[in-house]
Length: 250
Image 1: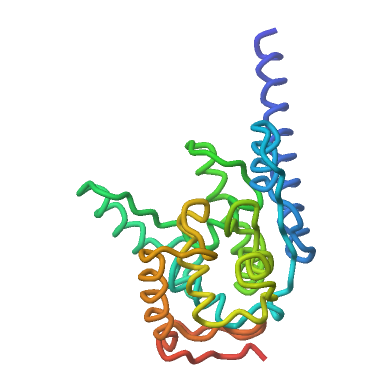
Image 2: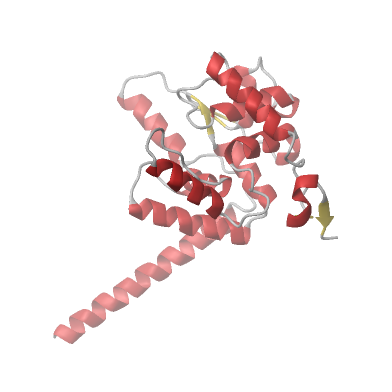
């Protein structure tokens, strides 16, 4: 009887793991091709607004990467993940530096890459736990394996929170920059948006503080050392990234 029970539990576990793997793989493959119109964060924020009696606001417009300002990918790389084009989802140098800084105390530094942020924005709930961190690593691995860097950047720029009730680059262009479209954003405006990303509910690109303007200028300086974002089909040669040279797969 005991061996029968253990056998049943083992089969259930195998089926659960197989179901999890298949469904998550299908979800990642699906989002390789179709727009991400809603994320767990959007649902969570909307639920919080309803429960607290606030005005419900969720502004989000999906736009393809070719209709986004060419400065936007460079700005978010300068701000969030300068090695995005050459790492495989995890920047171990940044993780090491962040750990060394955090051991000294003071303001905690994170080391999440754009790929990691995309994985948790699109597939996971908000919060901090070892389970969630493990799933973040799993989904980061999947999207790096199955999506191009261009697709990761496209989903990131369309799904990330950029202000209260504002999600994605096109929505923030409309509501914070006088009704603009994402394609019309200037280099300076993209740098300002990128400057808010550590905490877009605290920092505003619509009414930037002096601190935000300083961050904006720093990001603009960093953007000079980052190559323009490659088009689909262009491959990054790590030896020539600093010079902005690309090798085409064609």
